[in-house]
Length: 333
Image (cartoon, rainbow, N blue to C red; front, side, top):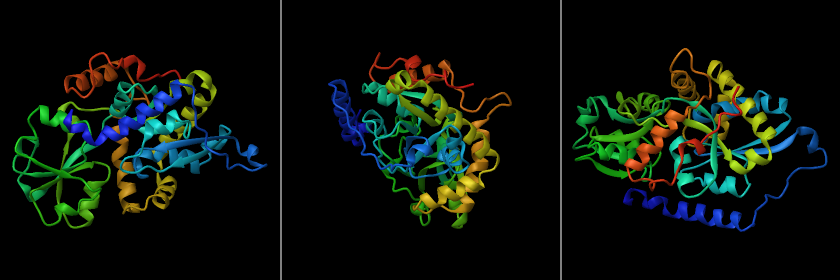
């Protein structure tokens, strides 16, 4: 469990919030609505798990194209950062929904947080390692001797370690940048296949992407989540938000330009219009890996596999999470 020491503070916060909620305490955000805001619809906020990027494209499209308005919802999208406290934001009611990854849902539930996935926009996880083409690395078996910039606490790392792919690899902190690769062909960087490969090429680097999903680590990503409490108390709100977000994703993956403009405005961390367009193009086959894939679908078998993997890696305690409680498809068509 040493791989997760950076998450200790975050999990402590989750545990504190859970204890407050269970003891009957609650926190409410002060309303900023005025007398005429009722006409805009029911206020709802969605917390992002990272800086605004294509992984959140469906929510931005639903916002700017009026799909949330059509459901009588006045939606606020809250940008995230490197360590956004997604679970506490939901448990304290500061946001009603959030976008995260399936492995995070399992971690939240292992800590006792009743977080439930209601839509998985991306079926095949975009997580990859980025290496320079002149590094001599053709695959994961060639990583020994490299330096890897990575974010401690991400669950794909113990997966790679357990399978021996990081033997002989020096791990150093990741700073949301590929700058370390510019002068060092022996530097690898954790990345998403929908962004960093083009960012590297724009800076004159020829790179190779090593997809972690090819090894069997493939949690759903761009997962829309909420709390079990909201599902039980306000199922109609959840239904409307899921419907609008699902439609937003479908339309975004067909025509991303309008939402990308909004994402670019909200992202102040080096994103470009070209990278967002590239990302949307790369996202489509990840969201629709087969001709029969339905946008947002989830299966019990996939969740069972993920929970079993995380138990095997000793990331969660045995019997701490039941796969069938991690998600519901009751709001999907």
